[in-house]
Image 1 (cartoon, one colour):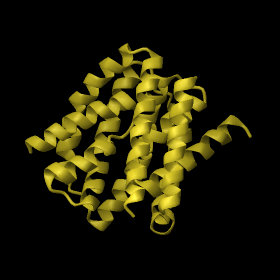
Image 2: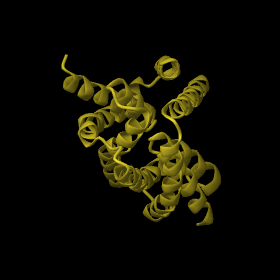
Image 3: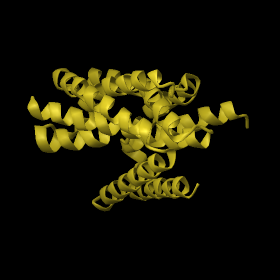
Image 4: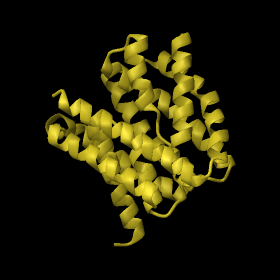
Length: 115
Length: 121
């Protein structure tokens, strides 16, 4: 229980600082520090993220930073894409594509810094 | 292509990649929203809202497979709230460029983690 609380604190901080779900922090920590298997960690992380992202949305809404129309425009197709993507995962997410995806993230990082 | 259609298409692509690689949508939502014209903090805040539909769908599916440990998820989720509040104070104080650079650093880390995972296959 105390570990779960610490994991939550760290994940919440991470999530709201970067605008991400926090799964990057939660999943490895649940596996390494709380004895979860990866599948259970990923699923449980999603449940936690629901609360974390909702809290972050509320907090930032108070600051006037949430653009709801963009959230819906991007978020709803994304939900459909995610269902599709996890179905594809079995066959398609091989080594080459993983490396390509990593390269994509790197180029986005470069663009973000250069602008 | 209209910017509405572009936003939806980028959202779909972000979700697809997130679903395939098990990285959360946020990591792709934020640059997508910046590309669509939002400031860094706006993009991050909006990303958190955009994450909600994907997470809801994901949790529902995982629950049907019996993979969710609800009590643990609740504890982690509720414990995250002080962290969220704390980080928001920091995020609204930082200037946009610093926040952007921090985010770029995160992208590099995630890219490195993905590449590492790929090598082990």
